[in-house]
Image (cartoon, rainbow, N blue to C red; front, side):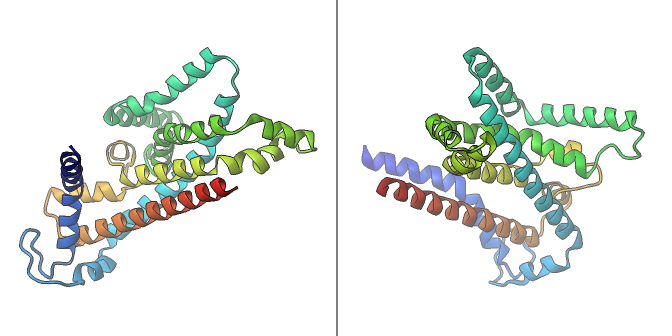
Length: 266
């Protein structure tokens, strides 16, 4: 049984990461072919410097991902604290059910509904362009919020409420008590929510496609390129993004394991 379980895990990992491995492999191809490896080269990585459209799209994607992750982490943490403070179990379950709807809803439904909402308000306000940077940012914050809330909520449940009350008894205001006592204890959940929001925003295509207007992100530009042909410089950029996110996740796991060891030693 152990051999079968290991074989099963190996097949799952192979199925998940084989396409990424192929992409990374062909990003070092010296030729322009995406199915015949002609030789090892860094030419396509150097070519990225001269691809203005892709670099602009990558910059747009990073700006949206960082801003939406920061804002949704702040709002989501505040919302999680508010939900945790609710005394009524019915109210708490109702709010959590409403919170889960954006995650369960199909991306195309969310994208189309947000597009219609933004166009409606754009026409109402007399804007020349209803869709753009702000609409993409608001859309990303909208679908990131539930993930941040669900990341923070378990940490809040693990936190002893007596600690916050003790801090207030010693002279802290409720706000100061939150930053001094509660926030450090839920910091791992907050950081997890930020990482999740960042990666989801970085990867999103469907919702961005319906709400971007002329402000195109990298997934949209790559999608438009697939209508013609995909060159290895796309593989090179995707490889850099994958390595960056993968490194970030490793650093997070190392930091989390160290913090857990310190808690265990304490």
